[in-house]
Image (cartoon, rainbow, N blue to C red; front, side):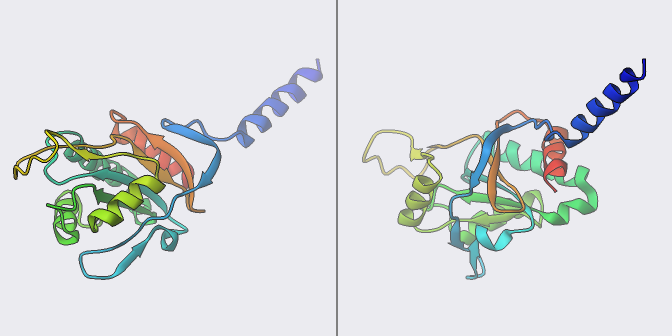
Length: 190
């Protein structure tokens, strides 16, 4: 009978040492996050590498997006509120995949409409294309090739990349996670 309390203590110890159960899809093992270097709306260089020590959420979208982009940023706002003071250890980064309409200033204004602490970034078409390639993502203008209409939509990724404080890609958040689930994953990484 003495074995039972020892076994229970061992199981409790193992559970306490096990990695957290995340709501997002995990990278196992975590991998170094791809580079993300752009110039922000003030002309200051932004780099993901400089964010070490913080959890960073990165979403690629565009400001004219009718659905997933505003929903994602609204969920981020609610997740940041749920984190309270811990939100200061998180960076929420919106990267526009539509540089023809979204300058760095436009991307920043859009992100800040949801929360002033959010960062909106954009770049030249070549910079955005290179960035998407390094993140192994695709985005493109919908419609007929060669169409120059001013009103158009963009096909772009719907997931959010989550980078841990050590600069490693740890999670992918799919569309549809609740703000509470997003905040729980962030807390587990902090």
